[in-house]
Length: 464
Length: 101
Ligand SMILES: [Zn+2]
Image (cartoon, rainbow over all chains, first blue to last red; front, side, top):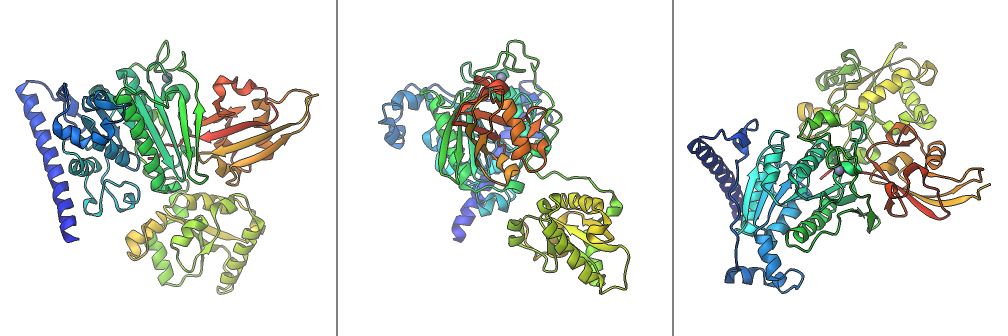
């Protein structure tokens, strides 16, 4: 379908051009008004300034009646609810696995304006769950890609793409311009930032999250209900937080949570009222089970929504959480450089047939995806447990290889994983093992792991 | 002397990975002079169920930030937190909050 790809490419380009035009118009407006264009400061021209209010529609046009007829006949919504929707603006923070289905249903339902925030570009590994983006839009900013896809679905909705990260310097001004906020983000600092901005601006926040085969959904800060900080006053230790790249996620799981999130936003915007204020919806896809948890009320001692708040303006959330506002994998620096080799150095050693053992410490499920054939496989968890069976196996393999040398004293063991974090932990464990376990070994890890191997040495090696 | 207490203890949101990936545990707490509360249950879990890296589950005598405790499908805040007196057949769920999207 060359025509389809071409249409997608062109619509993405139109989306981008329109966004550029909008940026130019905003700058022109700011210059004409003699203002500073403060909204865009710090994040370039990506963030347009103040938006004009949505026009208050007194009645539905015949075209609107035809388009929305199947939901207009629902007494719970009706003409009144549809007009309220058309007058509502929703800020979508994150155009990924949750944001795509959410924005899609809100656009289809005829919400007035959708703000779309995302700092990332579309990547191949997003496509299994981020269903507004397509193959042709890889490399395009997600906010622009989402806007282009949504425009094809419903051109009657206003789309405002913000191609940048939500920033504490501009978030409050942005959130103030919208009626409801949907947190579809993928990291802890952004979740605290969105919460605090919503509390300070007095906006309801519908927050979804998903990982592996589970999802969670809560509406915060709705008419005196609790906020995110009421539930989670302290951020989790960074080492306990798992992202979608490390933990995995089945695409349809954020799809389901994003759809329920869209429903919750629609109910708030159309006046039906929410279902998950003071309730958490938990979804376990493995068991096919939904659970509704009754939550605490707003806490009088909450740092941001309590009686004597200490958070009265937005702060540095990356410092507060001790992690960065992306879902990119963290890079550990556990070992010094003499305990590490680069993929290039390891390649040279292979070419020169230097006797050694290569130890792959990834979980079995990842070894099933791809591996180097000569590697010995022991998952990190088994090393951490000092599992005797596995250690014996490793000792045997070292012995076998050692026999091919003339009794070298410190036998080299190179440790590899996906990205070069777990391999460092494994080297530490091997270094601390008593010599009787494996004999005298010299353990080093391969920097950047198999993904560095794929990008720098062997382009046919799969990346995941 | 308090009678033994049977509970269903559940882990979710990834917290189960610290317990061999097992989400549901049928637990019988032995007789002891004091009634069982969540504080004692956490100590018991640390000694009997938690396999490794307790710092990923606990902080001091409580759960670490980012883990929500739910007693019979209600936030433990509503039930007295660490001081909640466990009843026979209670369901206690420890859920790690998710941040992915
Ligand atoms: Zn609060």
